[in-house]
Amino acid sequence: MEEQVFLSSLPRSEGALSGADGEVLGETVRQLEAYFAGRLTRFDLPLALSGTPLQERVWRALLTIPYGETVAYSDVARDVSAERAVRAVGGAIGKNPVGIVVPCHRVVGKSGAITGYAGGVANKVWLLAHEARTRGEGPLFARRS
Image 1 (cartoon, rainbow, N blue to C red):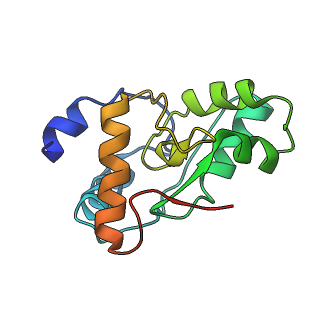
Image 2: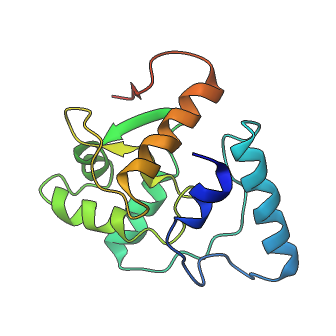
């Protein structure tokens, strides 16, 4: 899938970048270009993530998942002290307003199965394969425990 086709297929979000002026938007574009070129593994952008307390904890937890690795929804639930609320955690992940930057695509089913993604499962697979390819090591879906 070509980068432009991929990007055009993603859902749009408003207001997730703090101070989204020309300078911030320009830096966002530069960092996304570097990510897609395999030169950037962690974004450094001013985020203004606003949601419920659970959503905000989940989104912060997503930022800790290393590039090229995956974790299970239940792992994220444990990380945010919501072990009994895996479905709610999944819902919070699905409401992530800045996919790719906040890497919700790195969350998979407990068995390693590729499951839902707001941008479409095919795009999630593409992002994970891109990270594995540009990371240049290990299996396609390395898991963090």
